[in-house]
Structure formats: C-alpha cells, structure tokens
Amino acid sequence: MLYIRNKLAKPFIWLFLILLGLFNLYPFVYMLLMSLKTNEEIILYNPFGLPKSIYFENYKNAWSKFSIPIYFKNS
Image (cartoon, rainbow, N blue to C red):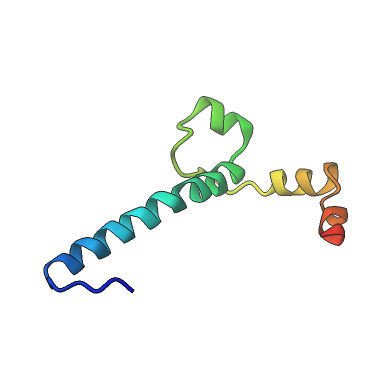
C-alpha cells in the first residue's frame, strides 16, 4: 500500500478515487435509466433525464425474444 507522509494529500486522493468511481458508474446508471423508458420517451423527450414512468416491457421483450433463459443455463 502506498504510504503517504503528508496528511493533507490523503483527502485529495480520496476525492480523486471517489470521482473516478462515479465516472465509472455513470454508464451503468445511464443504461439502467434508458432501459426503463419507452422508445418514444428516449427519442422525443430528454434522453438524459429520469423516466416519467417506469416501463418494464423492455425487460419482458428482451427475455422472450432473445432466449435469455437459455443463455443463463449455458453460462
């Protein structure tokens, strides 16, 4: 582990690591928010905003159209 003599540097390192973690989580949060929207809501309204209503049909369609249970079984 990296030994840091200067105690003033520790908060900056922690801040950097927290920001890096948030930067890495952003694509997953964005993907989750997009999956809960309808296609119309993504295209016509703010694609970066929160969903107006939660739409689980996308998960139902993916589960039935792409044989996801078979993929789980194979892996």
